Amino acid sequence: MKSNFIDLLLRIKAAVLGQHQSPGVSSQETPTSSESDRDVANLRSPLMLPPPDAVIIKTPLALKEVVSAPPETHYLEIQDDGKTRKIAYTISGDMDAQNVLLCLPGLLETKNTFLVIHHYFMKFSNCKVISIDFSGRGESDHLDDAGIYKMSLYLADISQLIRSIILANDLVRPKLTILGTSMGGVLAMYLTQIFGKKIDEIILNDIALTVNWTSLYALYKSMKNELGFREVRQLAKDLKVDERAISDVQLPGHFDLSYRADVWGMNFHEALEDYKGRVGLIYGEKSKICTQQRVQEAKKVIPRLHTLEVSGSGHPVPFTPPVCEFIEAEMGV
Image (cartoon, rainbow, N blue to C red):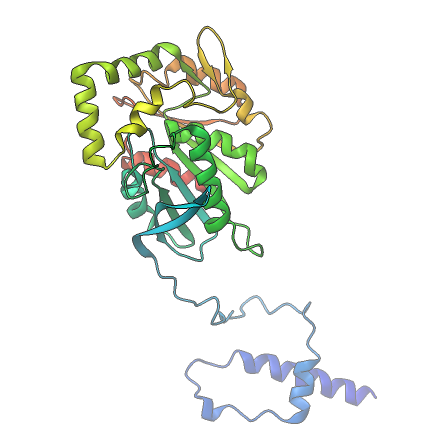
């Protein structure tokens, strides 16, 4: 009995040493496993740890080549009262990535605003970037004459895209970060009420928890001013933005999401009340929208807030290398 036990130990030792044969040994020089050798291999416990100098051979799955795809435009079909319209989005990076960055543009922006973000993150593995054109902008369909551009419409469209494109696989939980510029940042806040823990972080580009009435009035005045409106109209043409998407902003019903108003402006604090994820804030030193006062107020409400001030920048903040690096650090890619 003792002899059989010693023989068993010797065979185990031989089998382990066989795993560490020199890379120069060809397969023809490897002895053929006997039936007893196979029995010994079957006796190995998953709790047995390899020696400290063991060479870990990666499996074919671990060696899978990750292809980082360049930005490409796709379309999501939205059904509205029996009518179909398309929402355009650009996607790049590793299509199987766990880290997902969803980019939401501002009022007069399109998904192309984030092309620098797409290209920046292509150098990282396990990372995918998606940017979206809201209805009436870029390559997304315009609403018909009966439709009204409003915040709840954008929120519903983004929610459907998240469910259909990002959260479609129930077996894999993506690490979702939402980057929102100005109006897109406001929408990012409200998305936390819908998806909660499924959003790991939101990063706000030059928008805090309050927007001053004076800033909104200045925006509306510039649109109504003849010269200002002419410039905005030309910009809308250049960016392929429906002029109605700009004029509807001035309608009372455009911001139809719940918010608290006071003498200072519109407050979005309630949107983040129950959100436990991370929050980042990028703001311009010279911004009229996200002022130093509003940043300090946000820090009091969100103690975990991570901030980046961009020297010399107004509203919104451009995606310079330091800004991209901040986003990268927040995502932890």
